[in-house]
Length: 299
Image 1 (cartoon, helix red, strand yellow):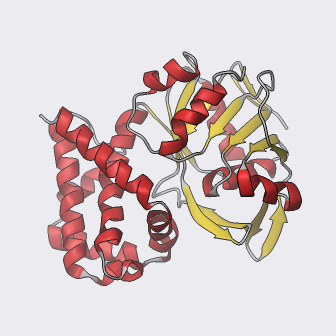
Image 2: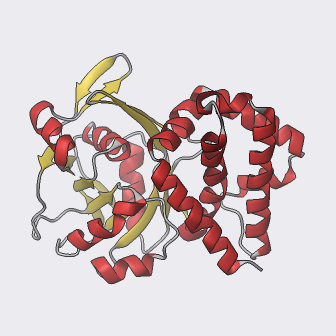
């Protein structure tokens, strides 16, 4: 199956990184009978080679139709390489991808670095910034993950030179809700303004699994999110998406109640709690990055 938009044709995709995010996107795209390859290492590579990419689809366990790679050749060309790694793995991945001839690297990475900085490593004009709308974990070697509800956070792609339209169309055909934003950098600033305080709430709680039951902690967390968005607005930046402005409008008590409900929900468990507890080093690094950025750019 081929997806066309203007001059871009999407037939081959490589997923670089086979954690929760990379594995889920690989599985969903492979269901559309696209040519999907996954690049893995270590124990994950061994599992994929022996058992395939297995994932839960409702009550059923399926095996994705993907090609598993243990190395990436320079002339192995893909329409898009989706880079789904943690922020602390980003630069090594970009250095390796420098030698591959694929034209577009889709960076689904939590980071406030500027994209031109990344292109000094992998090549000018190759970065297409994006962010996943998904979460979950593994049950043994079986992926147990889901897409984020589209009204909360669809997969988000930055607007560039038209390449984003072809990718968005391919995602939507695969049932992956998707949006395109004008400035992906500002979107990520706003995203971290919210998720960093949320992660901190789990780390500060004596009972992280039930952090939403702590009314005082929810008030503190709501106040931190509100202040972050107010500081961003004072920098002259428009909140992205605009619905983030709700955090600056809601009364503090109501915001804390809503936040506590979200923490206690199945959404909070899948998309907030699991990731925060699985990647504390990454989240603490993002904490330093976000507040360092805000201090440097404060009005």
